Length: 221
Image 1 (cartoon, helix red, strand yellow):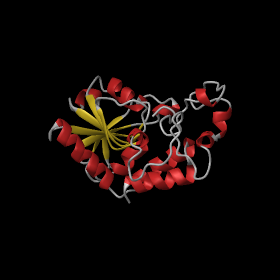
Image 2 (tube, rainbow, N blue to C red):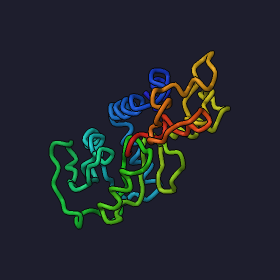
Image 3 (cartoon, helix red, strand yellow):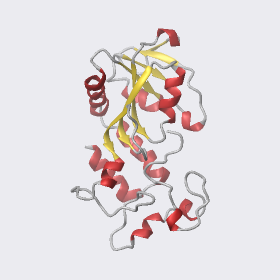
Image 4 (tube, helix red, strand yellow):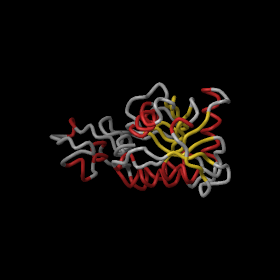
C-alpha cells in the first residue's frame, strides 16, 4: 500500500493527534521492506553510493532485515532517552548486531527513519555521533518548516499548500487538520487538547490563536 493511501486512511479515521502519529509509524513499519529500500535509494542519489545508513529504535529493528550497510542506535529520544548504544548491522536481521564504539562509525551517515516532526531524533544522533550524521531521509515529513538536509517520500505541508492536488481537502490554516465533510472549517480543531492546552503546552485563547498542528507536532520526534 502506498503512503498516500495510508495517510488518507488514517486522516479519515483519526483526524490527527497522537493516535494518528502512532498508527502512521506502525503502518509505515509494516510495509514489507519497500519503504527502507526507497529511502536507501533516495539517500544514495542525494549523497552518493558510498554513504552508509543509521537506523534507530523500533523502526530500525523492523528495517534491519533490508538495510545491510549500516548501523543501529537506540531510540526513545521523545521519551527522554539519550543516544548511547550503537551496533553494526549483520545483514541478516535485527537479532545479530555487533556493538561498536562511536570512533568505529563511518564518517558519512544518513539517518533513515519512519517520520520526522521537530527533528529532535536527528539532532540527537548528529550530536551523539560527533557530526557523522549528514542528513536524514524519512517516509513521512510532518515538520512545519523544511530542513535543507531532510528529504522524504511524503510531506504533509505539500498536501496542505497544494489545494489543486487530486487528494487535497479543505484544511485548517491554523492546525493543518483536514476539515470534515459538511462541517465548518473551524470544526477541524475539535481535539480535546485544542480546547485548553495545545500539543506544545501553550494556553489557547480562541481559534485564531490555535497554532498547534495535529499533523506536525509529534512529541520529540
